[in-house]
Length: 157
Image (cartoon, rainbow, N blue to C red; front, side, top):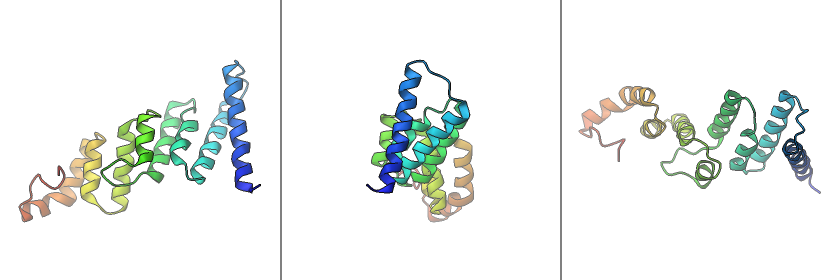
């Protein structure tokens, strides 16, 4: 059997055992140990190419700020910059109930990396990050739009 499959099975068994024991009321595991279990299983799923499922273990991190940070980092590594939601992005929003603002913020970050300021501004607006979108529009898009006579058409189209 492949070593990667064995590692995935080991972490899956550990995570499922934790889930069952927690459901039965056994809460003996320290928070740091639980967080390590969740992040390890998530990293393994991401490595295996099912990043959208890697969100699920991260949603079990008990500290809300740490959970949000871990999920946002995962999204930043895996979201595309396209205007349309990919199948994985749609799955995490619709099935795992991740805030769509987090997904669009990650898509904006990807667009910034790709140096696509128009898409970055569009995703920032979709994420509700008005101030950041305003900065991108003023610094990168406004002058060219005014010169080309395309005022208010490039982002909204």
